[in-house]
Image (cartoon, rainbow, N blue to C red):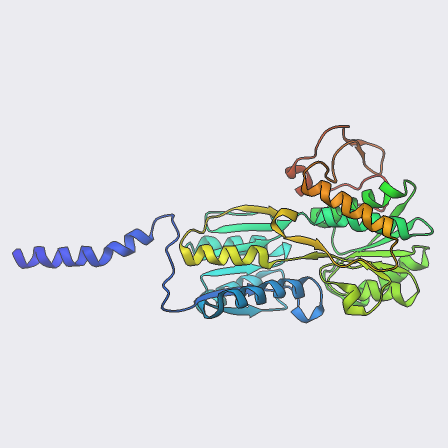
Length: 365
């Protein structure tokens, strides 16, 4: 009996770490081996668009952590069951945290997260979460508003075009913010929207931009993953507003007036550090200027100095929380009051936005 008692004591001591790791607190990762980080991209990073900027964030994390982490990338992953298989593959490779960068991955990620409670999941641009899955995004609508000021000031016709991917709240919110910015300097400005129903299709994106140019638009903005809408505008001698990366630098044309840009590394680095430290917790994160999540590219030299000064002044007000984009009064493009004067739209209402503001031509449905 004495030998049996000693044996049982040894077994219980050996199992103690396993029971401890079963708690809701994140277990600190061993320093003996690098933390494996999985990253799933909806397109190839070489597109110089959305996935390109996400990969810049990944590269920043690799430089920051050095040999403490090992990144495994998967690109051109469809927003369907294929993404579940990709996540399972990353888990089989030993990844303890997985980032996925596109909206329609979220349900598939949540499915996998429920099956793997010991892995941490980070979904970009969605709203679903659970104990081991966070969602994250940034207040890009603020940069959209500032770019709208520049577009409204530079447009001679007052007719602006916008190439939109899908009618998700994210895209609708950006179009609305861009329109409000343009109308803040030109109250008669209008924004015509053409949907492509794809995040990434260079041919469709260019065709959509050309149709807007044919309709009399002289500035083209976009929520798409390539530079094709901007290139179409440049080829016609019109102006463009880029997105994701610095399109003026990429195209070599100062007819790209400015580009709202992402800094994904500002989120990825702290989240990876939390896994290493054993402090990771699920959250719904919506970062902004204070977190360096969003920024504007350098502004074209074609934009007058007084317009640049105005943009800088509004950005300073946003940082001071003395102004934001969706403060009332606001009407939709059917004339219905959506936000009363003096009221501030809640994050919940912004994150579920499914209507267009006054001045937008097109349907959000």
